[in-house]
Length: 306
Image 1 (cartoon, one colour):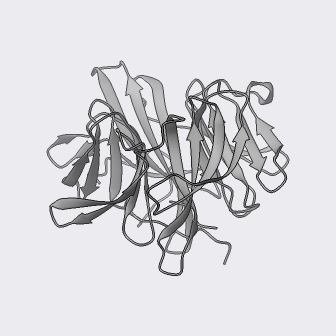
Image 2 (tube, rainbow, N blue to C red):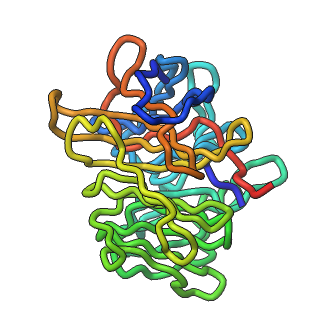
Image 3 (cartoon, rainbow, N blue to C red):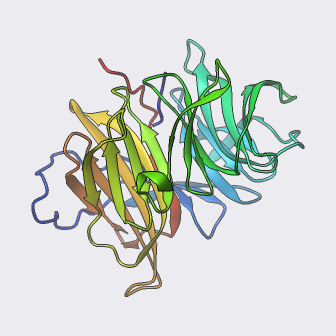
């Protein structure tokens, strides 16, 4: 199962591990624009603008990106130099509002074959075929609340959905039931994102606590890291797992409100084994990051045990 998976680095936090791993190129979902911006070597290399609110972006193994938002709802987009080609889209989906979409299966060439989507209009998860003019839904599951975002669980093959009421549910789609949950009863205040790794560890971003917490399969805390250099209250948080130079890494992007400036945007790189902050950045070469609600890697990683 695949998991999708800039900078001028500032001084590393006191006690942080020494890292030779720079933050890779990023896809930024801009907060005040309907634009996906690609950041590489501290610069915005290109941007892709939607015709309506941008909600999510996921890079794919074949070099495309799965974009959620705009009038097309969900679309697969390929970049050609300075232009973009929409390979397929879900503009005919008139029964829901997709908040987040990820590829759940791929063909032998790395092209998305099945798409997992989270619908907030009729709170549900559903699986639908890719590359079709009509949206062919093959499975759906009713949710207890409107979803915020959805991920795949590489340890179990299940679906992990973060709800807007700050609860998290793991759904066993083969048996149509919830098999694991997380929320305020577990001590969390405002869960904005949650991802799972192949070793069944779960990483939780809590906006009220301003922290990333790693949990074992029994929901026992392995480590908790309070993110440093917060320029204001935590408002948006997003997580991405990947591996580099045999190290298991976590990318955490945060949008802050308030502080010395009106807003702040920071990308952190953490070691998933220890929770230590390896590096962080809040700027481009000629200024600060544009306001974003999510930053993710511009490369799809098949995050597997071996």
